[in-house]
Image (cartoon, rainbow, N blue to C red; front, side, top):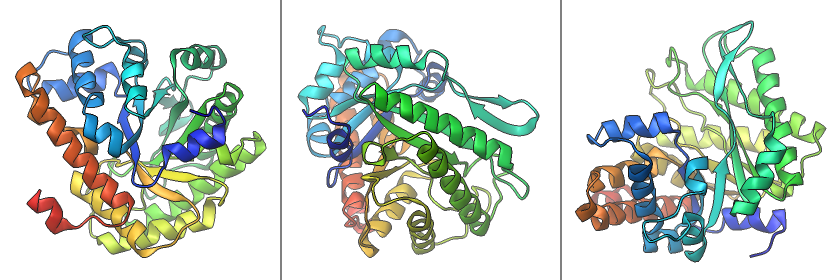
Length: 341
């Protein structure tokens, strides 16, 4: 595989393929495991993620890369094979979440700043040596009638840009993720407000990337879709698709090779339908694909249920969901196919 940033970025958004976000923190995956009555241990976390990356059909046909939590990047499968080697053997690219999480931002009530820049250059060297060829950093943007503040938007954009520059220096493709929260408090914002804030956030983010001299051809954008709040859902699939594309056209340079959306509180079907509608109705300068966590994993987690005898069932559920997302990335997902599958 070529080590050029541009080539890695293009491979990450190859036609009909997208990213599996399997980078849940230990606290987050514990909540997911609590839902199936499974204790979260290093071994159970390894077993679950190994089940996903050994789903041969999904990995070879539909998944271009896997975002890993640091623990998983250095873990070995049950047979002693490093999990990064399992991922690479399936023709997929290992990646790593590198931020230290969103923390309360001093002087900015209800807003956060993502931490993790200290020591990042040294960590990136270690991650590259372990096999990671892309990374992810998530900035969290609160939204309401009065939020976000200019200070919080600029601070998070600057952190994203600093991170991206450090990644590229280390030979790692940065995924730049400025997430405008769909399901944050109070979660009752209109789609008009979502469009306004998303456009503003992306504009400031790309200004910061330019200031940090980030090579746009060697990065991937991971934005939220333009969608009304979780407590105010009224917009149709077509409206979400149209407004999202309008914002992207206004803010994202054509040099960026691809946009891999987060699902961000949407249901599995919503996330699939919105992506498909965008790809079905527009000719765009960038590839539009998926970088989903829960929307790719939830059915597989339920089918697996923490039991070794259910591994095959979990892999079938994951492969089916990955295929549906792949169809959406081609603009050809149909609701009737989803129901019939």
